[in-house]
Image (cartoon, rainbow, N blue to C red):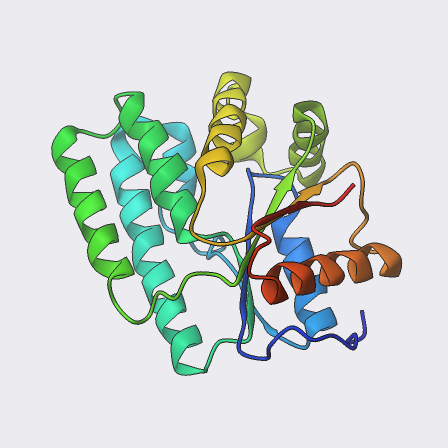
Amino acid sequence: MTKLTHNVPPGALITLAGTVGVGKSTLTNVLSEALGFKAAFEKVDGNPYLEDYYSDFKKWSFHLQIYFLAERYKQQKKMHEEGLGYVQDRSIYEDVGIFAKLQYDQGNMSDRDYDTYRSLFEAMVMSPYFPKPDVLIYIDGHFDSIMKRIHRRGRDMEINTDIAFWENLYDRYSQWISEFKEAPILHLDIDHYDCHDPYSVKTIVKGIEQLKNDDQLTYLKLT
């Protein structure tokens, strides 16, 4: 994807959100190229807890969430020091509002551990390294479509996870985005766009421009 002509400020932060398997990483790559921004990815490869987490949520939930929180802090600090101009794969708001909360609600994280996690999160977002996204791109789709993507990419730890976990996660994302107020939201449906299609990418960039440059616009769904 070649860089497009656009009027998104060069120091903007565009953050992608959405459940596992919706294509955040792919779109992060495409949009960073289209905008001429850098890409910031969630650290999955080399994560020392991820496989253990999927095999035993109760034992490893707290460890995994603390790991992600630490990595997110380092990522945010780096982007801040570089003056931003990034497309970011996943937001810290999902870490605390969905993944940590899910494990706590299911009894896989104790009150003590959850309170400690929340305290760390609150301290981090108070620092200057955590500017709110200029636009949050929320990627959504039918549950069946998302499950097909999860199976297609073939990570055993995801494929072998009980479908009830994915259904719960899907429902929590729907509730979470309905209450999200930290940034303007650009809502994409995976069944209605193709990030490898130049027209689709141009439409997404135009949506980012609209939300960034219109102070009265806080939500836009592309269909």
